[in-house]
Amino acid sequence: MKKLINSPGTVIADALRGIEVSDNRVRVDHTHRIVLRKEPKADGKVALVSGGGSGHEPLHAGFVGEGMLDAACAGEMFTSPTPDQIVAAIDAADTGAGTLLIVKNYTGDVMNFEMGAELTGAQVRTVLVADDVAVEDSTFTAGRRGVAGTMIVEKIAGAAAEEGMGLDDVASLARAVAASTRSMGMALTSCTVPAAGRPTFDLPEHEMEIGIGIHGEPGRHREPFTDAAHIARQLVEPVLADLNFGDSDVILLVNGMGGTPLIELYVMVAEVTALLEAADVRIARCLVGNYVTSLDMAGCSVTLTRAEPEWLRLYDEPVNTAGLRWGA
Image (cartoon, rainbow, N blue to C red):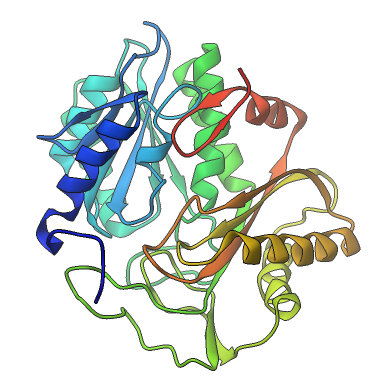
């Protein structure tokens, strides 16, 4: 294993020091391993808190800033943050209007965020993101996994909170966006967790895994490696079969898993777009890049969100984070 680290045991602490130095939008609570806005939003605005296991960067720490999150908890590698971290994040981010917790649907995350919500004295609402169509249940979840669609939920809900929408309304909006989002991913290689020092699963050179999760979980099946056009069909068709996207605008996210060059993701965007156009799905917005990763895994995922006009307006609102920036 060759990685740019000092030791497996210090990766997260060392990375948080790097985040603090490189991103002037945030400050880091190193005791609780929380990334926070350096300049908190105005009093009386709903706070957004998320987090999860490290290794998915820029999710979640890279989405702390204007228009998105107020705080992100960094768990151990591919491991949920602890309730104490979550309580500290809620207490630090809350401005008096309550806090929305955005949680990916993994058993550890759900349990620990629930405990954190119970332990804090603040007003809290929770939204679960479960956008992965690949499997209904897995070793890590009861129900579908939360994957790249989490970022879309954070963006739209973050804009609403920035505008001053109340807690229950932001929570209702976030749940509606999550319910209207579907994703499917694939891998060309496994990821390598530093503490393990070897690939999470063995994937021969001539094969690919369809339907993977973001922690190196196996997918629906393996099949011989083939071209981008065929791979795009393997991702798009299950998403379209799961939810009717044909009568609304959609937000398309083609997300890299961490080890795929951007030029290959652009090839995938072209193939995915052709398939969606053939299915009469209207692409209103398209985003491509490494946003919700699985360390060094080569592969990608496709996310579609049915987008109401108001959701598109909120999606277009300014955002200023390390991982996502546009507008003012």
